[in-house]
Image (tube, rainbow, N blue to C red; front, top):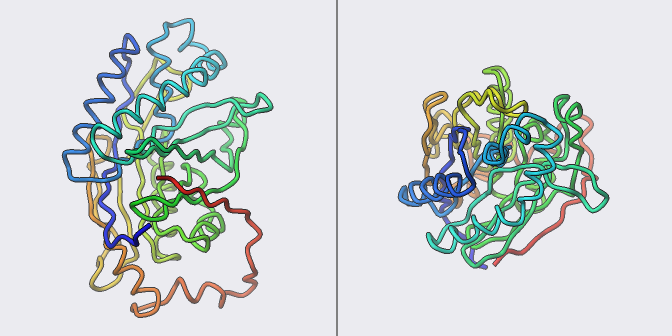
Length: 302
């Protein structure tokens, strides 16, 4: 694959609603993808647990019970991803599907996000580190960490809490990732800022672009995604000639919208050896720095 110079990406501040049917949900997603593609983006990023919205379509006996929600939304995974793959082909974009519960081979629930390409390839990244809430829900850690080789460049996905752990991002970057996608779902402003801080820090440490996509709005019908606070953001290192603040684009807190930026990947590559600072190259100068033991799978996606 060629080495791209820019990554044109749109990040969703996606409102969790209460669609009355799966067809209503599909119409909403189709409209969001069309609007996202109209920004000129080649990659659209949806948030963590965006898939839980489908539970609303299945009636109160499903959406009112967390275990039943997990079971029924997990059962929709294949159809949900296929629907996004069709939209990706129609609009000629890559899409990170809103993550949701999926069943592992041994019957456990994991939190999985799927990256689909216009050609129909599908890559899956499962969340690696569980929050206390997910432990309570019975959602378990998945893996392994993956880097996806795409026509847009090498991409990794760190789902929400995973972005707060620097060694995960570092392992992905050492495996070639130049962009890390961070779908998130946080119920408080403090949670949003934790994930945002992690996203900004990972961009600074590794001289990459990070893309945060949150759920927004209240959904009192759901015991899983009842409160949602956040703003989308696209981050790079604060370096002269790239961005003085490190923020390429950010949304208005809690407002449903797409946030778009064109990240100059070629400039970021140059910064690694010729920037004001050399955070990427100086990683090993930290006291105690050691070779990483995290296994990373490289997944080619056409």
